[in-house]
Image (cartoon, rainbow, N blue to C red; front, side):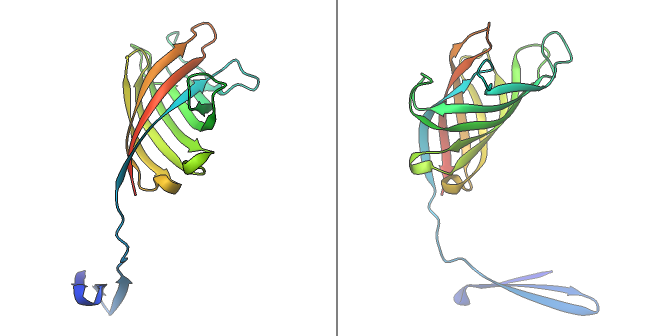
Length: 180
């Protein structure tokens, strides 16, 4: 394979020789320079299994008494403040699974989908480990859509309220995301 870049014409030529023929492909370089920026904002995530309908439901039952193996599907409200009655800005859609046998350690896979304001229709994707009883938990942002296309960064989760009887939790998420 031969790669030729002619900067003066702003073209890239790829030549691939395979007997008995040769193929050439020309691609135009994109002239738009994208500028990267850091966005930082905070939302509150409300996991409420007792709602009707619930915002979180088990889809795989645990295999041990500790809860290991349980997987919950979520569509949790995201709000600007810690009260559920504060302004709704989107939903957390995805799942979390009990991934640790020694502690309450979750595998979180979720999209924060925004439904109002500047980020309406955009989302960020979070995938990582959540050690629930740590004061601050950090999980990576692995992508996004809309205004968060090409996003990368991290979120920090802090439990605001947890009710062990109902399983309801409110978690403050501070989001640090690099995007274009």
